[in-house]
Length: 197
Image (tube, rainbow, N blue to C red; front, top):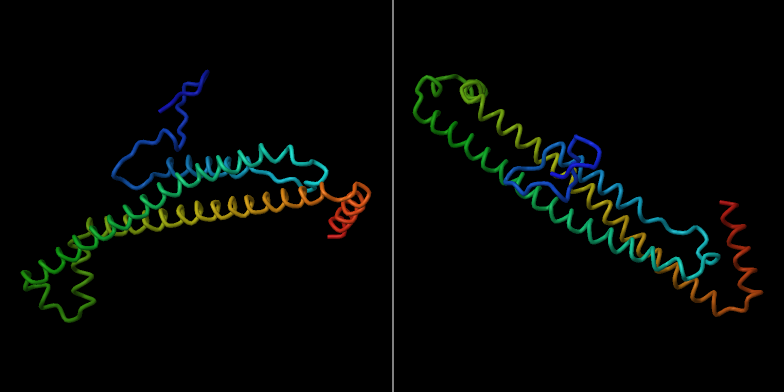
């Protein structure tokens, strides 16, 4: 964990999170989401690329590529996190089911209960800790899935910005080949259309 200079409180970022066999914690999710928001904010496209020219596109291309690379790394972490959460749910479910089946097979008192609902509720009370573990792992899975969907949405947003940037580059390149008077007229038309919208 890194310390921020002049501050005694540790600053957690997703790049210094430990690799564990546990699903992410709230603190880790918060660190990832903060980094994702920061990566997304780094990428801004010009509303009027013709007036800026080709020179500004180099920085934007670098920013988008760096953001896409980092988001891809976080996407892999999110996939691994979701897979681990699913595995933990499966293990908790299997443990719960085998304990219930074993108890049902060996406990005559539970088998003699009148209904399946009554037998299940009695078993739930007897295996309260296993029920809670299963519920907690299901909540972890839901959170891991939501995190994956956030990363996926931000990745799609960056892909769209990348495509829009290339469209802007092509537009500026084509505009540079047009007569300057005609280029100015087209630019003014575009600006007037943008104001109308």
